[in-house]
Length: 145
Image (cartoon, rainbow, N blue to C red; front, side, top):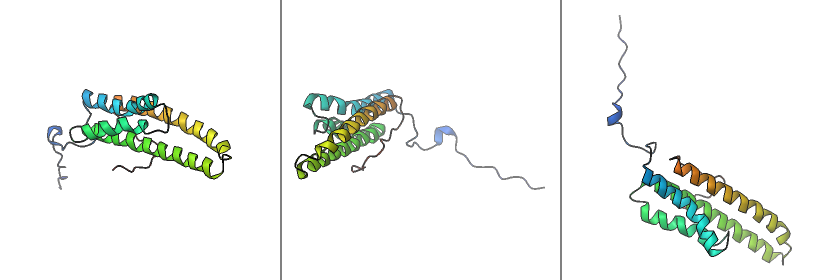
């Protein structure tokens, strides 16, 4: 008779810490702030495609990236998403300029759709971060690794 080999599984207390660990309440709160700071930045600067949208996530990422892994991940995600939105805004402005204003017929509807999507995705990301879930924005250039 053969005896089946026992599988070697470390006890839960000995398993290595990884990205699946539940973030602390403090980490979740800072991640929430990273996402919502983009909204605040746009309100304060008065522009959806302005520098204010990614200034908040940038500051939070620079301050917390070495001490809070969950905040590092979520602040980078918010920063990358808002940089992507800023690039789209600049592209729409360039389109309008090189067509001597005719591009505005295309830029305004696209800008409205992008602005609404930005608002919805930012709020959704903030909710998910507060729940401790690593949120990934769709259609985002991941420029900051």
